[in-house]
Amino acid sequence: MRILHCCLANFYIDGYGYQENILPRHNKADGHTVKILASTETYIDNQVLGCVEPGTYVNEDGIEVTRVPYRQFLPRSLMRRLRYYQGVRQFLESFEPDVILYHGNGGHGIVEVVSYCSKNPNVTLYVDSHESFANSGRNPLSRHVLHGFINRIWIQQSLPSIKKMLCVAPECYPFLEKLYGIPEDLMELYPLGGEILPREDHFALRSSVRDRLAFSDDDIVLLHTGKLNTQKNTALLLDAFSQVEDLTAFKLLIVGSSAPDVESQIMKAKSADERISYIGWLPSARLQECFHAADIYMQPGTASASFQQSLCAGCAGAARSAHSYPEFFDDAYWPINSVEDIVLLLRDIARTPRILDDKKNRCFTFARSRLDYSELAKRLYR
Image (cartoon, rainbow, N blue to C red; front, side):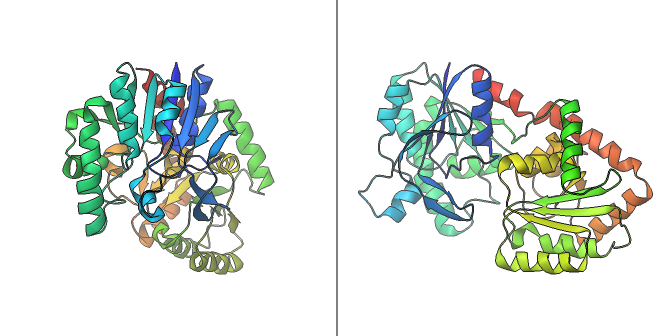
């Protein structure tokens, strides 16, 4: 089977741990011919969104990636917003995919893909959606013009060719229904996930990484990651951690690129507390190793796909109880909505260590049944 991942509605970053990086890898491992069609947008030096030259190359997973340029009949800033591309039709006719997963539901790229599908009705088209009222349409121009008018027209034109709209979270449903007019029976929950290792490999990796990072077997490692801006509430986590300085078995590991003001807060806290480690940005493979070394993933701010990845690596999860988390994760995480919540959680674990093991087991059971990318990848074959 020939499977195409279309990353035309957003940027595509080589070597990261996003859905569009991991699903193609599993499709290829399942024996399929896989290609990625992407925009030229990526992160330059893992910091700034920019563009690379169009062209074709083979990525770190041995998968061919083709980056296509924007068309030029309007100013470049508008082309990047509206997602008009050159060469999409020619690529599709050359590859002749059996299945297409279009990542994201915005931009004119979907119109070109649907035009191809309408002339090749045996092609199965899925569109996934990461959009919700929490991350999209947050100002009147974006909500009413870009999403509620322009993208709505393109999506409505495309609906007859779309087999399913795959929503990465329950809060995508009302966004798609209200702004795009998509019927509920066309939508399906398709969560972001992670990769699950055999347990013996997990424990071997956990031991070696903890040795490398100088954590003992008795340490309880809290992990906090991401593109650390003020919305990630790193300062709130640091405040809470400073209030349990007597709990010497707890260690806080922070990984990720930080905004200057956040990095200043981290470095100040680190200099005052030897239990805090700050690594900075790591490539995806090294970040995955940190998930396996940690005990609790701490997400006191905006949501990140790293939360699901950490559960798949055996962590217990603690997150701000926003949006769909109570509905979707149920009891497979601890809600942390304030400094007081974090302090109480850590003191409860210190008093009764068994509750950490119980939560880790509950989180891993949930991850294995709902978040395993090796199983999520197979959804595209049905």
